[in-house]
Amino acid sequence: MILAAGVGERMRPLTEHTPKPLLEAGGRPLIAWHIEALAALGLRELVINVSHLAGQIMDWCGDGSRWGVRISYSLEPEPLETAGGIHRALPLLGDAPFLVLNGDVWTAFPLQRLLAQRNLAPGSAHLVLVDNPPQHPEGDFCMTAGGSLSARPAGTRGLTYAGIGVYTAGFFADMAPGKLPLRPLLDAAIAAGRVSGEHFGGPWTDVGTPQRLRELDVLLSSSP
Image 1 (cartoon, rainbow, N blue to C red):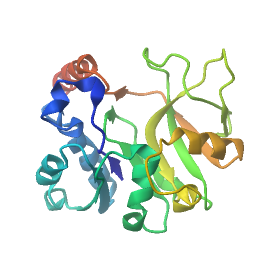
Image 2 (image 1 turned 45 degrees about the vertical axis):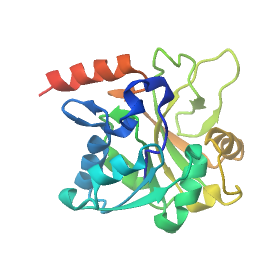
Image 3 (image 1 turned 90 degrees about the vertical axis):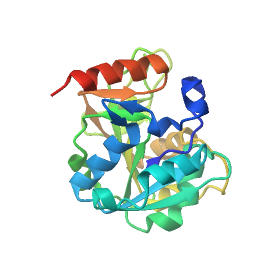
Image 4 (image 1 turned 180 degrees about the vertical axis):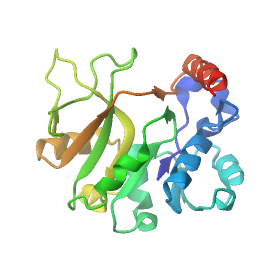
């Protein structure tokens, strides 16, 4: 699942007429990088949630056939935030563990590493964590050498959730439909020992501002 429903408030005025996933870096829309990577991985069934300027995303991505995938859309009348959007899309995602990517990140993370999480226990999740970017210096969670996650105590530094994870449908079983961020569910599941993680120290960008989009565009345009 690619999360693409947000308004992109911090990207204004760019997102007033163009949805954030269709903003370009390195000569292609941000969402295209994800779709191409997922197709290369051999995944054929993709779900994209849409809300803000939804028609533009649906028109540009189409049914996915040009990438050799099939895209289904979960339409939200208003953005439901991350957990709310995933919960709404569960009927499209099936019963097996599924990969979730934030539509506003770019990364060189090798997604094939996540294929090892196909047999996650019901109600659990597995997250990719990255080094803390300048705009988020303290991070989100702490991780042991064995990959167990824990809450980050105040005044300490952890690692940052990359917006890349594998989830089970049961992870969202106890929430009611509607608007809800992901963090409360993650905090509760981590406290219950139901979330594992892995660290990626390579290229990753949260494309949250026009400046970071320009920097990513320069990076990708100058790369072979």
